[in-house]
Image (cartoon, rainbow, N blue to C red):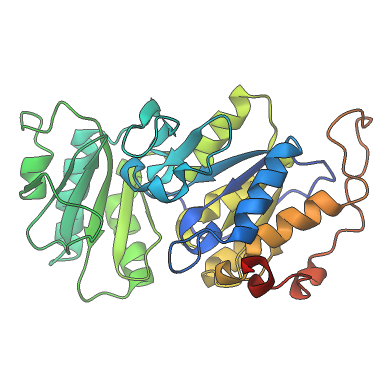
Length: 322
């Protein structure tokens, strides 16, 4: 079980970033779920400068249309809180799974049982690689038409009709509990059977396989490409981002972030509606020490960079919209 309590951090390494890992909702996206012109320009500038950008989100692949046109050349995104690495280059609804880290059905059934006992009234939905099923009491999701309305025990049954698809994650909703209280209760109840987190302002939990998180899948992704944690800059706003922020060499909590996220991050930026990710990317690319090649090992990177200057944004959102 992973705690939201901030872990001891290594000193931020003065290393030019090789990769930017950013959450979507509440971080890169504005509250209306749009990407601002300023953010689009910053993402393109980072890629042109040779910095890889990867979206790391709790969203399932079917909900990635909002950013599919802005996925960098590699075309990959980490979805489902680390449950899948997905190639989005096929366009809307034509994604391809590159890696799946499933929640084992035996563990999923144990989790459902234990959480029902600990929090009566909990309702469930189950995300598969392509299918989505929910219990009748689970709230309707405006972007999702369920493939079936069934009790979670039937959805997850080893001999059920959904067994052909891996389970990416379970969603657990409680109509009455306070969100952070529900998260703490669920982590105690579930123990080491699964990884429990949340990203919604409501009492909606996201349950992945044991050891599966944004951080662990991002670490695998970077390791395969020879990128160290010190070369990663990460952005997030909710508890499901905390492990990733702790892992990255430099991390930023959004101005609208959950208090635990603010405590976990090494740095802070302005809110998502003020283009906080773009602000930091612009400052990274403006550093006089920034080099993409030829810098001797150990060369200090952007010693003059100060997050204090983030409060003084040079271009307003209105100017970028013009």
